[in-house]
Length: 333
Image (cartoon, rainbow, N blue to C red; front, top):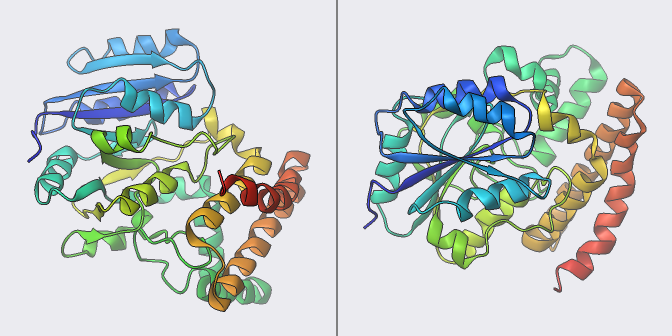
């Protein structure tokens, strides 16, 4: 049985001090008080230190990154923790007052639970900061015939009409986005899932140690390193649980590390490596859905280039080919 007093909250931050301040303010309002906060800081130390000083009632430890990237930030978070459970949240996440109470309650319900997550609701005014949310809205509400056609393909073939489901990695490799919408609050009880939300995931520390934490093979913005670790936890025989009462709100920020999202080369490679490592197009159904997803992803890179005139977006197309080439070698290592 876990000791309910040993919890750490690990926050990754990079030049988003206003977001960090809001995040810490929500943590100080927790009904469960006995936890430490570890801030992995990828930027200059002064701003984060000034923010932390405003929250003297929290036990805060600041760790500076010598190596860039979210994978390093995640790993520093758990390596500097002494708790039984490490809860990783992003600096633009706001937890509700009883969030940690429900996380604790879920872990204590079953020793074979290796990780817990919950809703990461995107407020309506912040959905414009996330391309996927905007795209899904256009696919479902646009009167444009082409967008309707593309939407039917995307929603049925790639998302398998599971837009409101939580915690699923589908046969196309896409993830179900249900945790971002208020519909997930209607779940009557916790459910078992494939992966935990990247901006809101709590793991037993012993598993982070035994499985060597998050994999540095995921480069750039590090996308897909978090579901990769989730799949390792499940492969080790543990369950992952989504508790609809452990509510958080994701105030998606376009500051700080968000600007690195133009690193499309690494993002393409990361996705393909994750897919080839864990899903694999080993049936006709998977191959068709995965191929459609790859086409849509590369259309997205082209769209972002046309929208911004930033050639970095087109590197995602090259990253797709590099990902297929390198994944064969990496999966053997």
